[in-house]
Image (cartoon, rainbow, N blue to C red; front, side):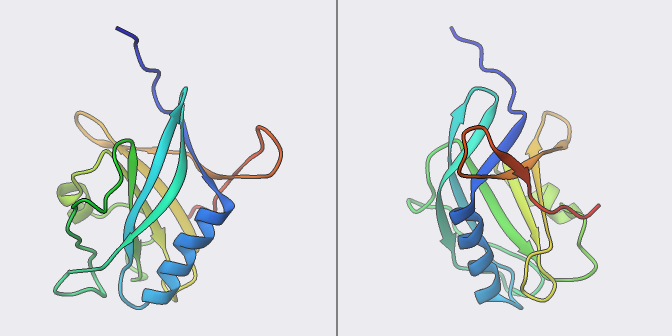
Length: 150
């Protein structure tokens, strides 16, 4: 059996960052969300596809809820959703921590529709931990962190 190395960071190509940004802006003031399909390359995840999902929450301005069905890409994948309230800029809320069943969660803070912060979290045995998330550039090995608010 081959041991997998721990995921150390996630890379999202600029075109997929733009697709997520556009989805978040188009849905504002409702929270937007969906998935990023990924490939594992050693200790990194590389996003390969954007799969937006409709928000089915009773209060879509405050929560993102979606049915995970055949539209969801296979593992590894990242679940993403936006936060549109100024009271939730720093990442996962208590509700997120309890309700997100996925292993990876990307929170995009966009209080006015334009994303200001991207924070990626990985579920562990006892708690979530934050991972660096960045965009790939044209050159090989070029990686730049996405904006992040504390």
